[in-house]
Image (tube, rainbow, N blue to C red; front, top):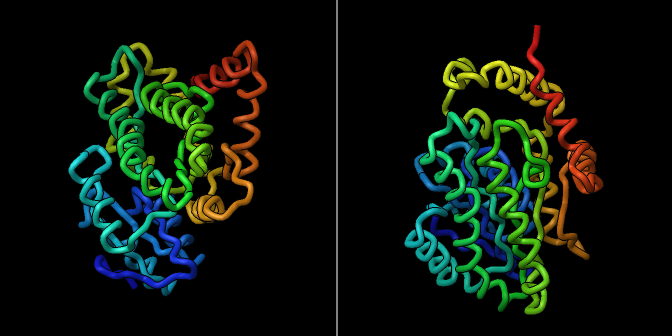
Length: 292
C-alpha cells in the first residue's frame, strides 16, 4: 500500500529518498528498498503518473511515502526535502535516479533540447544533492547516483546524454573524498541496457529520428538497429537493477563505482583500460554500420 502522508516504522529508522520512481529503475528501486525495511520516500515530477508505482507497492505489500519532486525546480526540491525532514526527522540516503533520454547529434540537434537534457541529468542531480547533503552529513549517510555505462563510454548519437552522465561521474568522483571527510559515502551506479520505459519515453519514433538526421541518416539507422538488438536480447530487468541499487544502501564497504551486470562491467572495463582512446573508438564506430 502507499500513502503520501504515511510515516512507516522501520528498523533503525533508516530513511531513503529516491527520485524518478514512476516507472523503470526508480520504481523497482523503491520497491526493493521498502522490502529491505527502509522508510522509502518515492518521488516523481508528476503525481498523476503514480499508478504503476502504487500497484507495485500493493503487490509487494509495502508502504511507500509518495511525494512530488521536480529535480529541475529549486522550490520543489526545498519543499520535498523540507517535508521529509518534518515528517521523518532524518535522511539516511539519497538515490538520484530521475533522468531523461536524448538521441541526436550535434549538427541536427536543437540547443534547447541539449540544455534540457543537461538540466535534468546533471544540474538536477547537483541541486538535489546540495540540499540533501547537510542531512546526510548529520546521519553519516549515503549519496547514491544512477548514472549509466554512458557515463564512462561516450556513445554515438548520445552526445548530450553522455555529456550529462560524464559530468555527474566527474562531479561525484571529485566529491567523494570530500564527502567522506564528513562521514558521507558517495557512489555511482552504472546500468547497461535495461528493459524499462526509459527508451520509450524519448517521445519520438525511429523513422522520424532518421528522417530528421540529414547526412547522418545511415549512421543513425545503424545505431538504432544495434540499440534495438541490445534491448531485445541483452537488456537487464529493472527489478534486477533495483536490487543492485538497494544493495548499495547497506554494502560495506561501499565501492565508488558499481556496475549492475557482467555486461556492464565488461563494457566499462574497455574504457577504464583504454589509455589512448582507440579501443573505445573502434568499438563505437562498429555500431554505425548500415544494415543491408
